[in-house]
Length: 207
Image 1 (cartoon, one colour):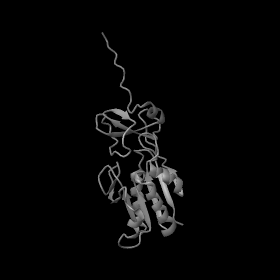
Image 2: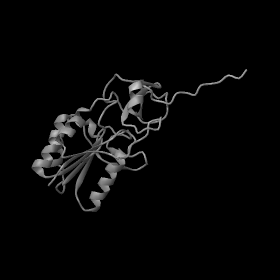
Image 3: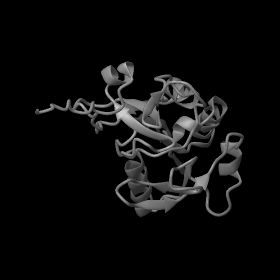
Image 4: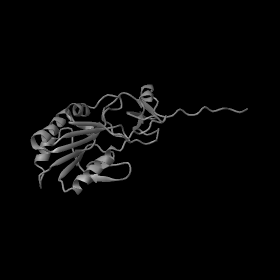
């Protein structure tokens, strides 16, 4: 039977790499699927991994009817769907994916973040947790600067961690503390403390 899958983790955990592996594996088996994404950091209509691999994808928007898009797609019948950046799905779009699974017997694999920079669930992720047949945390955890497993995403503006602002703001996970908008992954303790970077070592003056 077809199933709806949701696999989640913090940034820098290899989600997009796994998405591309799924795409390759299913294509190698001769299955006809679609790859979708929204707001990938590399640009529109692409799934990119930080290890340097990428693939073309269908860019969906906030108002895209995913069920209609799949059903009218030209060519051979689509038998599975792979969705990256699934946190950007709306609750209604998740319901459309469930319809594709239940009524059209398509396997749907979604990958994304569970929570935003404030530590709150994205609406799409929250709906996936409720509806998905399989909900799994990826077992590769990125590291906080303190060395502990990082499960929280933090937004940094001008070197300062922020807790207010629009939910969707595209940035990268780089080490430039002066970037306009960037993201870092933190353990719970340092996310709560608002410490996105390791404190500078104390300077001892020798006179």
